[in-house]
Amino acid sequence: MVTAKVWVLKKHFEGFPQTSDFEMKQEALANLKDGELLLESVFLSVDPYMRPYSKRDMKEGDVMIGTQVARIVESKNPAFAVGAFVVANRGWRTHFISDGKDLNLLPESWPESLPRSLALGTIGMPGLTAYFGLFEVCKMKPGETVLVNAAAGAVGSVVGQLAKIGGCKVVGCAGSDSKVAYLKKIGFDEAFNYKTVTSLDETLRKASPDGYDCFFDNVGGEFASIAINHMKKYGRIAVCGAISQYNDTVPQKGPYIQFPMIFNELSMKGFIVTSWYNRREEGVKALLKWVLEGKLKYHEQVTERFENMPAAFIGMLKGENLGKAIIKV
Ligand SMILES: NC(=O)C1=CN([C@@H]2O[C@H](COP(=O)(O)OP(=O)(O)OC[C@H]3O[C@@H](n4cnc5c(N)ncnc54)[C@H](OP(=O)(O)O)[C@@H]3O)[C@@H](O)[C@H]2O)C=CC1
Ligand SMILES: O=C(O)CCC[C@H](O)\C=C/C=C/C=C/C(=O)C/C=C\CCCCCO
Image 1 (tube, rainbow, N blue to C red):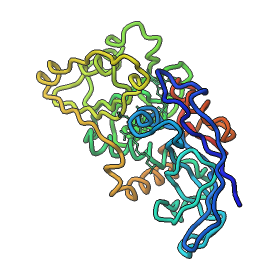
Image 2 (image 1 turned 90 degrees about the vertical axis):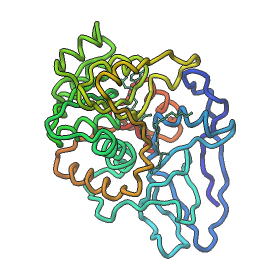
Image 3 (image 1 turned 30 degrees about the vertical axis):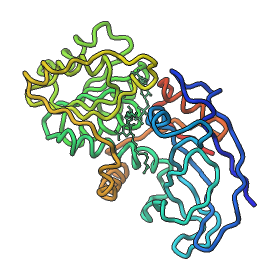
């Protein structure tokens, strides 16, 4: 019999998550029935959505929500071979049983040269968020100017690079000078540290005096309230995330968006990446191709050991990650 380790939400987060809000437990797994598989997580993902979604969807004592790349270690299902790798959405667990219906096999063409953890990042949900958010929600066109915040993270770093691949000028910001240096290294035209600029308004104006056609907003809050005044006529805003608001105990006021929306005839659209998953294969194929061609660079912030998942999650919310935050079991 296999015993899985799982992380549960011991206490709902109040403000910024604390390690004491989590508890590690053990779960004895039953023997496999016909049609079932036993899987072990190899890489797990910590993502910002876990913070707001825990409040919306979870009760205390539930296993933390989340995805993993897992290896099939035992199979009583002829459609799944032992040794194959899948992406699963089974929460913070080291092992689990599946009937195969909830699993996505990694593409057979997955190259040996690439870490499989990319299926949780640049070639997974965050990469697809960038792909559909930029091409479909923002409807980015060659020659335009794109603004993205949280630009050195999993989604933002892909947004900036896809904008360059698509023939645009790209401006990005992040929360440290080393992240800003990374943005310049991967091809951003302009990058700045939003924590140290004296005026965000001035900085956005200087980075693109004519304004922005597309704004891919990962942050919301005050940043978005200022950035909206820098949109060009008919500009498009993809509302992807609002990480600056996820840990608020008192809701922020504003933004008051009516004037710039009206005067510049802007479009603003929120989206959830999974609504585009009917085209997931197309997105994965495109992202994989650009990675292999060297046009789309990736960086992963790998935390070793399942035991360190809460610390990795909290660290990601604090901005300790460059690129995708991953846990290697
Ligand atoms: N709509 C959708 O379907 C999806 C939405 N998202 C959203 O996209 C955004 C980015 O996600 P993801 O790329 O996975 O995460 P990241 O890898 O970018 O990690 C989060 C980053 O957010 C930044 N951050 C944290 N707090 C603040 C703050 N107060 N102000 C500005 N930046 C902050 C930190 O970087 P820094 O050092 O720069 O501050 C941190 O590294 C999130 O808002 C997430 O919720 C993600 C996936 C799907
Ligand atoms: O990777 C996979 O294939 C599995 C899907 C994982 C995940 O469930 C898919 C989508 C994630 C969407 C993330 C969205 C955000 O980060 C935006 C977060 C919050 C918006 C506010 C919600 C307020 C709820 O009260």
